[in-house]
Length: 474
RNA sequence: GCUCCGAUGGUGUAGCACGGCCAAGCAUUCCGGCCUUUCGAGCCGAUGACUCGGGUUCAAAUCCCGGUCGGAGCACCA
Picture 1: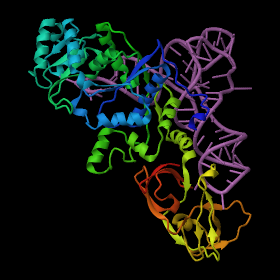
Picture 2 (picture 1 turned 90 degrees about the vertical axis):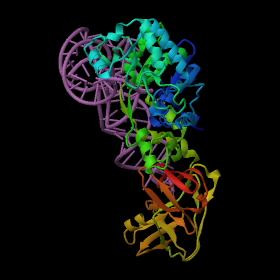
Picture 3 (picture 1 turned 60 degrees about the vertical axis):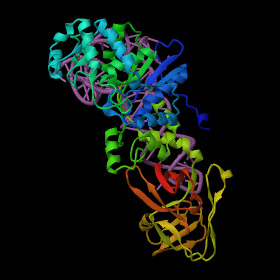
Picture 4 (picture 1 turned 45 degrees about the vertical axis):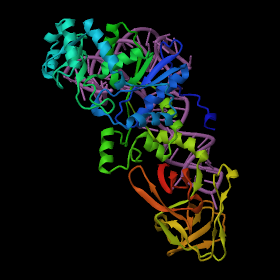
């Protein structure tokens, strides 16, 4: 159904230097589940692997024991799976510590790494002046000895580190002799206190990108400098350097994404969980009724530009609406209902399509007895002037008279305001909105017990879930 | 401050690597009209952009230089 649409434009650009298949990766840190920003890197990588064939590696980067949420190891793959991202291989960095140690030892022997026993303030000052720390010229033997001491737990946090030799005259001070390993004695959720010497991201990423055979790396421009740092690793070891591409930042307006903020909010009871619909997590967006295809289409549409941009909920919603509309059944919802009499003398019958473009789905029909009131949105009622005529959608025409309506027979006036209503016996429902507010009211009987995305006419698309509603978008 | 990146309508993009086919395409929003017993969908129409200044050239959104603005990095985080 969705596939039939003609998406003539909006294709991702070709990658450079593709020789046959590609190997790509996404590398989240396990601090929490994925949010909409992460979905971009996941989908972009997935798209290219689909196009060229090859492997898509999920590499969980958990070399900083202080920034790990154990739940994330499961939540991340779940989110990716829901997004339709096809991971062919999963790697967890904390299970590869020996690999990093072995390569480090090799590099120490070759003189590419040295052990620093100096406080970081001084080290940083020296780097700013392009001056070598005295340890830089120590022999490989001395360094290997110290490395063993480092591994044995001889040093405490901050007392020593392993440094990658680069170029002390590099114009960017942070590229000069960067830290390759540091000590962190916090317990690791997966490995406990087995290790205390952890590689920094620039070291482990380089090693893994090489060992896993990455051909292309696409990542955000925040990694531009890291790419430069990592190239020193590749050059020192004579490894083949992957193709890099850096895309610009997308700022996502009006959306709570920061893991630390969310975590704090969950803890304090402000948010109900990772899927609280006020959040920008994949789980929350799923709960509201966004479709995975919408994410994919949006990110392909917005491409891989290096300039920064703003995420457009407008466009995202429009894409999603196109996907869901065909399957969204129509129902009436009356917010803040008031009971209003129609003063009809005979029975009235309503006749409304379940989906205006799909008559085969049938109709929603209700009978309104004489003297029986209906539910009507109070706000709309208050706005109506005395004697003004409106059409109760799919039911009849009425005019306002005091606190009641007066029934009038059909007329030919096509320009009447049309307003939804609900029959007596409708269920109560609460609709939770992303801004944190809740709309409560009545939903027509035929909708009761339904789950999934529906369109509440003149109100918006809502995901129904166990007799509650979660607002999707207009 | 230093290093590095970027700049097309309200928003998101196409085009720029090989200057002319671009008095700039598409999507979305807004506005108007049609259709319609939804403020959804559909149809028609309208408004709206190449950051600025120089240069090269017969010709520049596309190449060069400078300014401006925006962003990223300057961690023993990723």
